[in-house]
Image 1 (cartoon, helix red, strand yellow):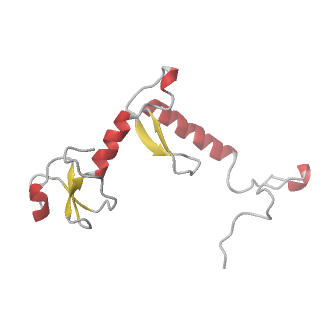
Image 2 (cartoon, one colour; image 1 turned 120 degrees about the vertical axis):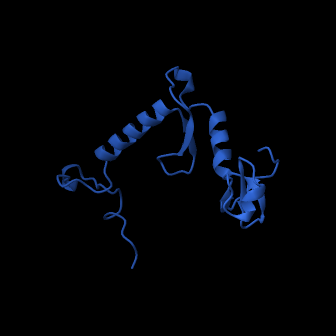
Image 3 (cartoon, helix red, strand yellow; image 1 turned 180 degrees about the horizontal axis):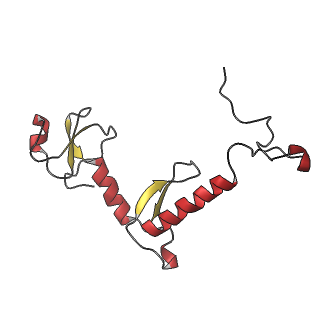
Length: 134
């Protein structure tokens, strides 16, 4: 929890602390605070709170002894919504590995793919790529 002991605001809309203040609501803010339009109150700055949370999390690969750089969170590449915490070195390696996987296994079948060669479909059991319903 932040210095204000105020719970995090789910809205993420408002004015952050800046000096000198631009809006009247910013005059009473301290660093790490935000004025929320929806709550009409001072709340902890969600960006700084996330940075604090990231700093407390260890790298997913911390046991390997090869971590370098600051730890930060990212959404999993699988699309599950899970936050993966990695140091800068391992995050770069993960991004390169994910890019290689996407090059090796693109969403669309390659031009030289022959479904009759092995009796398989690029898209699984369906007839083709997902298309928007009309």
